[in-house]
Amino acid sequence: MTLQHDAAPVAPGDAAAPVNHAHELEIVEVVAETAEAVSIVLDVPEHAESRFRYRPGQFLTVQIPTERPTGAARSYSLSSSPHFETDLVITVKRTHGGYASNWLCDNARPGRTLTVLPPSGQFTPAGLDNDVLLVGAGSGITPLMSIAKSVLIGGSGTVYLLYANRDRPSTIFGRELTAMLAEFPTRFAVEYWFEDQQGLPTADALARSLELFSAYDAFVCGPAPFMALAHEALRRVGIPEGHITVEKYRSLEGDPFADVVVAPPADGESTATVTVTRDGRTVELAWPRRTKLLDLLLSQGFDAPYSCREGECSSCACTVTAGEVKMLKNDTLVDADLRAGLTLACQAVPITDQVSVDFDQ
Image (cartoon, rainbow, N blue to C red; front, side, top):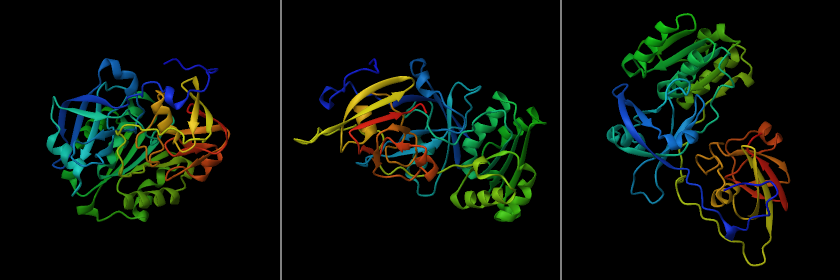
């Protein structure tokens, strides 16, 4: 579909074929990292390579086979680096009572395929030449590993990793971290924290470990209580809030793989008009007032980004450049985002008759 800036509005009944964002990727290897965690290596076919370009720290949304009517989908961080690894690697740790993680750990095997959405997420460094401080616990190491490898291989920054675990045997990527220390002795350092030896970490103890790195860009990932402690420790050592990035984990309640259904406008109901720009291309569409913007775009064949369709991941965030919209739900955008004109396409409905949004800003 060729998108033209001066195209006439497209009526809902004239929709192009919906874009199928889901892809089947073959598992080519499963690596046992610990007794409770595996890395799943996925091959990306040549025809889909452009859809699976990603930034260090991003995630994949994976469809888990289930009989549940609402489906089962979970987001798993990529532990691979786009700067030297051609395959995608997600690392999954069993969660007690967790259906998806246990299914993957028990059933992932070479030759099987997984249905996934393209990479997404905002837990990424702005560049690879700044020094970075990575603070993680448990499976929170997964996106941090992607960032560390990318900075060391694709950039010039130094990397300091503080990594907390229950004990040494539960340490994911232990062998790989040892190899990285040997390969980058002047640019990479790791401090391990083992609860069976040191007890649970506290904000004071973490601050003492991190006080030398107040000039670094910090990234934090792990269980929520740990991330809260780490965030407080980073503030105490003087790292500005704008240089602290904390990963946000949310379980998906809906099914982002479900078919998009857009109801036609009710009799006598007027439609708004929306002008949408992405990747330098622009399209103008008729927008039914009760239809979420992302649903409209997908139904019209527009290649809009998304991961959850629930307003919880911000993958579909775009900038309103003209007109006004209302979000039905917002759990991710903060006041500064809203002041900058950001909205979530999966939750936005029109208020004004004319709206312009830009995914490129």
